[in-house]
Each structure stands twice: as C-alpha cells, then as structure tokens.
Length: 392
Ligand SMILES: Cc1ncc(COP(=O)(O)O)c(C=O)c1O
Image 1 (cartoon, helix red, strand yellow):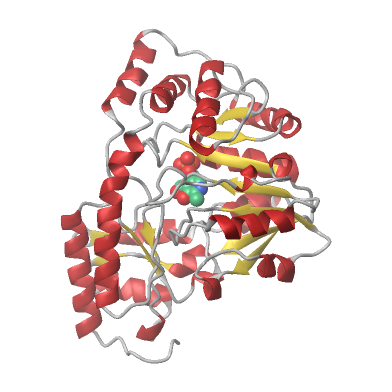
Image 2 (cartoon, protein in one colour):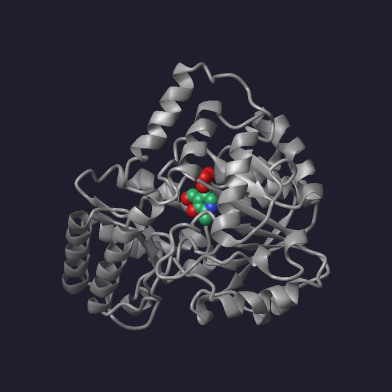
C-alpha cells in the first residue's frame, strides 16, 4: 500500500535535529546541549491555573478560535508589550502551539507552485509544511550578513511566484535579532508587494537588552502579516501546546476554518493556564532571561577562547558558532564531538544548506552543565585530530 500514500508526505525527511537527538540517546554519558526548550519548570501559578481548570471541569471544547478571555489576554499582552492592536473577537486565534499556527497560516495562504522566501540558516519546521501545501521553499543565504535579512537578499530571490516571506527573529538557530532600522528597510520594500509575511515571533519574550519589534508594526505591514507567537518558550510551556496567530480579520477568518477542521480547539485546560501566564505572569520571562543572558555571555566567551567565530546572539537561547576553521563538515564534527568528546550539539546542516559550517548549542542548561560541556568541547578541539585549516 505504501505506493498509494501521498508522495508529498513520503518525501518528507525526519528533521536533522530529531535524527541527531536519536543518536544522542545512544551516548547516555554525553553532555547534551541540543535541546530547544527552556530548562525551567512552568511557573507555579500557571500550573495551578491549569490544575484548577481541570478540577473545575473546564474540560470541554472551547470556541474554535479559543476562549475569548484568552484572546483578550493575548491581545492586551501584545498591545501593551509591543504596541500592536489586534481585535480579540476577529483577529486572534489560539492554536496548538506555534507549530499548528504555522500550519494553519501556510495552508491558508499557499497554493501549488507558490514560492516562500526564508532567511537561512533557519528552524527546520517551515519547509515540510510548505511542501505539503505544494509550495516551494527558497532559502536566502544570510551567512554573509551576520544572519540578518536584507532588502538585497529579498530582491535577489524574488520571482513572480513569490507569495510569502517567512521571518523568525529572534532566530532559531542563530539567536540574531533584526535591528529596528533594518527591519524598517525590509518593511519599506515589502509594503508595496502583494505577498504575505509569516513572522514567527515565538522567541519575542526571550530578548536581551533590547525591546522586541514586530515587522507588523511598520506602515503597510499589518494587513499582510501573520504573527505567530505562543507560550512554549516565554513561559516554559512546551507541553501545554498553546500558540497564537495575530492577523487582520479577513485572514484570521480563513485560518480559523483550517484550524477548526484540524483540531477543533486548543486544549481547554491549557487555555486557562495561558490566561494566567499572560495576565499575572508577564514578568515570568524576565526571570528566565536574566539567567539566559549570563549563560549566553559565558558560552560566547568560551567559544571565542576556543578560537571559533560567533555572532553574539541577542535573543532565544541558542548560539551558532562557525566551525569552518576546523576542517570538518558540521555533521562529521558533531558526530565526532559526540562519540569521542562526549558532547552533543546540533550540526548546522540541520538548519538548511546554509547552516553547513556551523553548529548550534543551546544554553537552556545550568551553568554547571554548560561548563562541563564546553570543557569537553575545548579539550576535544585541542586534542583531537581535527585539522585547523580550510573548511572541507
Ligand atoms: C522558531 C520556532 N518556531 C516554532 C516552534 C514551535 O513551537 P511550539 O512548541 O509552540 O509548537 C519552535 C520550536 O522549537 C521554534 O524554534
């Protein structure tokens, strides 16, 4: 029966990150720096709100778009925090994590043959969703621009089939944040184009020493932008599965249909916990950020000491050093580092072809775990037969 299955599905690959974490499980004594989720528990008051929802029998379906109270809380949150205005009745959708928000967004806007421009290296979750819609992913190489997107890159890759531009700042895997002025330039170019922008802002609350600015806040951008956000990273709620889209009512109305035929609604008890997170838990991310920032500085310092080039991350909890001076492909380097050096990092090639020559370390780990991992990595680089020289 296999040949009767949808060829688009059969063509999908298991993500490189997943393949590598399966390998990591075979090395139980390795220090694992691959995980992309906060190492803090969900804040206590948020957990209690979830438990209370269950004990009060809030266990049935909600409105397809999510509890209105939650949509109001989400709308107030991004209004107060980022100065964006979205009508909770018509422009906010509660989804099953940011993943389902992305799926609903792409399925609402894409048709066969549409091209989607994505700055890369990038989170590998977009391409499969685009391919399932019959769309084509076009990666734009940001490695020469400190991993930032530029108008020149958009122009170079633009065709008559360009239907959508994806942005993800702060970025997974680089941690890079677009400076406001450069974001403004992108907006200036995009505002006159007939394209959608899917702006994945899932790390918007994990930003260091800056304020998050959404592309949707620039003139002419709100009507074409679908903001993706959620609580997985900001409130360490990956397992609760709460995400959001914020988009004009004509787009949201269509996305709600895609969402409701897929999932009916996001998990009800999680929606109650989310209300608590967005009302009484607004300062929760700041407490985590304080620690991420100290860890970021520590990890960056250690990598520089090892002689590796690094673009300083300003958000998320990843760092993406270049290993081009070490003469190994990123997968081979990561595999040897794991099997011989006892440290797991994600090969950059898991983040598109433009991630080749880099590895991703997550610093969502305690300083003692990071110290041990980096000690091992340093020793591996110093003592292994990794050849310093031209990148293979
Ligand atoms: C950039 C990016 N977008 C979306 C997601 C998915 O988030 P969620 O767990 O809310 O589905 C992730 C998860 O790692 C991510 O890094």
